[in-house]
Amino acid sequence: MLQSGRTVTSMTTLTAAASNRSTRSLKPGKRLVSGPLGLVLGSTFGTLFSLYLLVSVTPLYAARAGAGASGAGLVTGMLLLGTVVAELVSAVAMRRFGYRMVLVTGAVLMGVPALALLSPGSITIVAAINAVRGFGFGLTTVALAAMTASLVPPDRRGEGLGLFGIADTLPGVIALPAGVWLAGHFGYALVVGLAAATALVPVAGFRWLPGRSGQRCALDRSDAAPTTGLIAGLRLGGLRLSLIFAASTVTAGVVESFLPLAGISGNVAALGLLVQALTATITRWWAGRLGDRHGHARLLIPGLMISAAGMIFMIWLGSPAAVIIGMGLFGAGFGISLNATFVLMLDSMPTAAVRTASALWNLAYDAGYGAGPMLFGVLVGPVGYPIAFALTGAVMIAAAPAARTRRTA
Image (cartoon, rainbow, N blue to C red; front, side, top):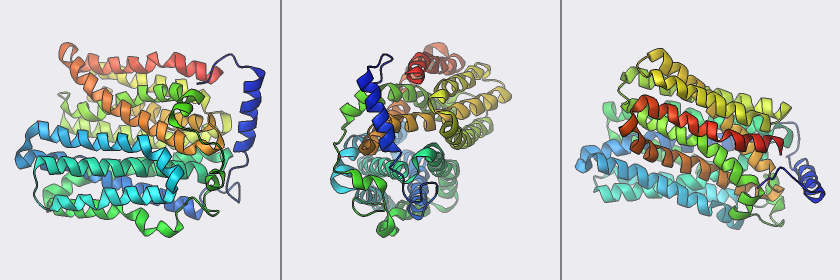
């Protein structure tokens, strides 16, 4: 963890690390989108499209099969559990087997088990399928983020990760509503088949994806360097940044889970979630460009405060305009936090620790996203939705001192 009082030795170490980072871009150094990076971005879009197609459809499938609301919750919980387990082991797996093998393994685990949903099964089978798909998704998302970070020039890292954010976010905007609509109009079989096919996009590009050997991935040449595990990554700055980021992902999980249940018009809820997703996508890319020029640490507090302001607007939950404005502000701040925390986490660690930084960032994302709805469900009963939404904004305000320390460290 970074501390505000540093010794000369620490400053020397950081200077050396910065020097190392300046040498790790691919040739040519100023080109942002190379052929391999384009393939990685395409793989990101495909695997996330597969995930989101079934995120809403699988619980619906379970509920209509007679499992009820508890069964629907179980299949979603198993998806998250599988994802978190994979993220815990992903850094070790990438170090042992390489980026490409981990990514393709995850893609197969996402795509092939989905086909089992074509045959009617018990809730136990559906939950098990979701757990396997979650494990596969955990592997793919960490590998794809690490690949992206290693394939972009260091002086354009924020912008490159912003492009990754677009490929990561747009599938949710398209596939979440599309999955439910397709299932209602054409049946589950079409959705399942499409989810299986899009998950396997990385398999089609296996030969050209960055691996552990050769010159396609800059960090492949650093495997001989000392490795950084999850615990060491937390000490190097990952813990503070993970907590700052988790403050935002807690609220993201709450908004996406509970806004449709908050007693407002379904059209308003849908539009609010759409606005939130679009503003997060745009500001994630914009924050990357701005951070590359002026420093990513400067964006931590603005990201938290803009998101918190958006949740304050939710006090006026009965006003459609307040809901849309609130969701737009939250999305804008969330997009800034998404990009800034990841870049800073990468920059706080040695060159060879991209795998660890990616794993920690994704763990913070999913841990906050999963914990937020559970805590909110307990809180909303006594205080009601408007106050409960506003209190989630207080979580991000509470994280501001840690963000300020990180900025001035």
